[in-house]
Image 1 (cartoon, rainbow, N blue to C red):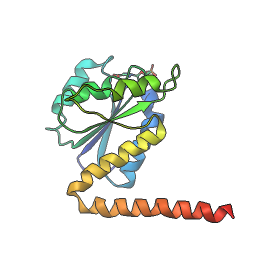
Image 2: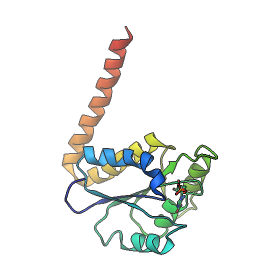
Image 3: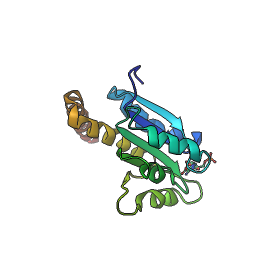
Image 4: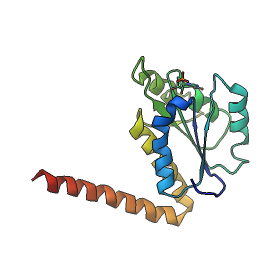
Length: 165
Ligand SMILES: Nc1c(C(=O)O)ncn1[C@@H]1O[C@H](COP(=O)(O)O)[C@@H](O)[C@H]1O
């Protein structure tokens, strides 16, 4: 994380979600996007969640990434209280392998969107990338950095094909 004022927040329902949510932070680190990370729970800390959501735009945030598992109400409840874009990451649950997390996040009522990713680590990676892509609409440095990232993906595929023969 850089020392600049955070423009992305990565929040999660429990510290047990960190193993997943760190993948979003890895992307933000790579693209040198300043971010904050915090455990906030709609269930366990409802007042903190409401305060965070209400203050988010005024505090300079541009995008919120919210990860939660099980009855994953956190992304939707934050989205209900801010007009910033909210990206929801369904964390894989033990009991139901993340189906519960996914369905809790994805089925938002019309009017209050949450951009929902895939379950688990690659979902968190994509949440980080989607945040960077949103920020890139007003930041040319990120446009170039995203193009470099896509080229690296192509090179990795070419490399894996070279190793197949
Ligand atoms: N889904 C939520 C919310 C919420 O949505 O506000 N708060 C905690 N949790 C989830 O409970 C799971 C188990 O948490 P613990 O490991 O702390 O028992 C975590 O995946 C967390 O995201």
